[in-house]
Length: 405
Image (cartoon, rainbow, N blue to C red):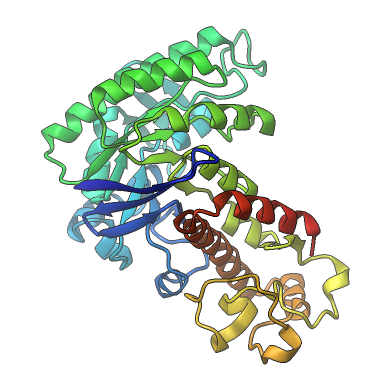
């Protein structure tokens, strides 16, 4: 089941406010979706995700197929019961992971032959197999199997060069054929959830338009833009982001896959995107980088060794405010004074110490903070769209981020 209600649009951009109803709950859009590759968002408990008002999370079809396997998933009736998450889940198709295997895989019209990165077993993934796995996982949103078109060519004669239009076309057209097969298998299995098609076409607007039109003719419940953030320069990604999302059907949800920085999210919203995911908040957290309202903070820098301030004095996450402020409370950016507020969070000095010592609490707190920042940013975006002030919000966001911490 999927129902998408378009609630508000922004006259100054393509931004829109929506409500997505799925089998396991309602998702307010625009939304950021934390990535739980192996059935867990790294370093963050399900309770913490609920406290920070995560509405939907991701699972990874490829990795869950490898471990723990479909027999375990079937025993639990799917991923929700296995990982104790009662809200919506989106699963990717496994296409990106297969693409990233490089020389370990061979792509054919039928599907992809590859060696398991876990034990070396010879395996095969087709559009049908991907849908069968995702049906067993019982995700609220499944994705068609596609070929992720790389920015740099992987063809033997042109390897390492920018992918040509002919190469991108061949990849895009096979993804379209795989979309049809994914859709047919989804229907055959009578999967009660929703299936999204994925727009491909590399860095070529004409190919993107062809892919978009043919997918729309297949009448998927929702659509994603894939094949971005795959090594291309930022200006190329922004060009495709400006071209594609707002051309997708207005009455269906739009998902930009694997993107990105806070700035990317705001730009994506302005171009009509409803849904985002990225490993960046948790991956950067594990490497000591925090996202804040006023720019990025690298906790490993020596200047933080004696700093008693929290990461972000306007943030209400557990790392910044402790238990004194509930994580669901929206950050208003109103300039609340840390010194006068009796905050119960952790200092930059303490987080610097944890990172230097390799203590596991460090990446746990940093992941909580970064995910809270991303989710709260989307809360603020939705509030601005509801109030009709997204244009002003967008400008203030840029000014705040440029200010620095």
